[in-house]
Length: 541
Image 1 (cartoon, rainbow, N blue to C red):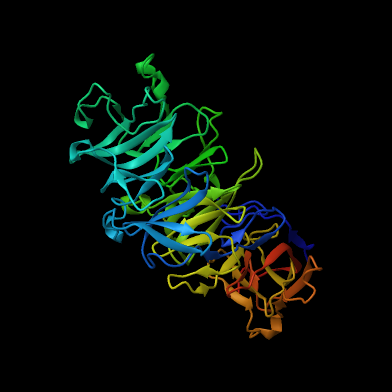
Image 2: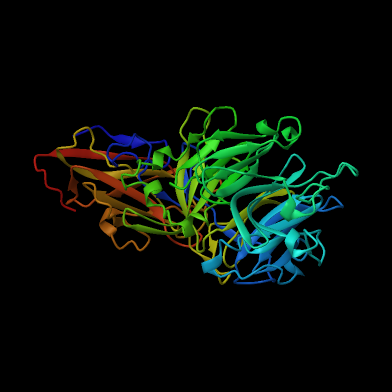
């Protein structure tokens, strides 16, 4: 008989190693859980609908927070070709300008993926299928350029050094996928401009205010804090362009930073002074600007192409990568990556969620799933709070409200959440063992009938079988109802589940979770008692 074994730290997913080789505290798969504190794992919160009215069941192409000329904050959104503004008093979306952007079907989403930035007290919008235009919070939208020859389309848009940059452009019907134009600063009025040619030039077709890049098509552009210049990513490289060097040092204005590319124009975001992005191989990177190269923060879910990791499972098609969206707030960074299939689990509309740890420690990684794929996101200010607002193909939502999600019909639905343990061999991978019971320390819940589902798998299998669930159908093993009327005062309780007598295995893994609407869980530790080593090497469950 072995001494009891317990775990009281939760470090998120590790897919680099086999599930019986990963270190203590790591999980081969955890879905819809939060790991904010290393000492607990808990179900994530859900989403809430941001406003009603407007274009329902239509793709959200862009969402942006806008500070208007009066200094007031507004939330604008492009949905199915029209521009809307959120009314904080009525909590509804009101139409500003209709039908100013092109078709938005799923097959041409990349072409009409609207990029929006604030510049000159306006919001500028552009896509690969729509000309650059601006709106000032009213019912009009104005094209940049007085004639078709001077209008421009593009896949990437950014503001840096009081300059507007547009990349991967279409000019007069001709595509320049590796070209960036930058606007002319108005020295007479000492104001930012949106003209992409010099005053002595006749127009956009004669402009010299552009530069071309090597390393494939331009995929993304971003303003990286207070650093000089705009950062531009191609398929395989990153550059920076310092507009203040154009006159004095034209050959030094454009500099290659490192040979790491980006997956798409929404696959990058600067969050709290750190640049995060995904490349076309599905690897996730972070860079503070203080080192000569970025750090791969998807290390724990990347097995270098062996085929059993999250990075390997990401759909690398051009269509899917073009929809990758990065967003986050504080220590949490999300990468909306589409569908995932791992360990017999089909995870629809998945996000890789990375909770950043202290310097020198591995990041905590889990998977979140949603009823619809998140396509765009921004941070908004509502009721004196900073919140994450996301857009999908039907609604605009706020993350982190309650424990339910919103489906396309604006109906609350359950968030299935679970945490799988690593495979345990209890110091001897070759001997068969029987385990009599598993002990679980959990936080009491206020919701009645808050049952914790416990499942078990043996000998490396990814098929987990329930040994305790809310139906209490497996009565001989016991069950854990986490509800307690004193949940406001109790921080933790101890539950026990007995395993079937026939459970014998070389390796054993458990899954803890909830699968019902509005039922949460929070576990602070778990452990095993009465571990008996057998002579037989045959596992029966």
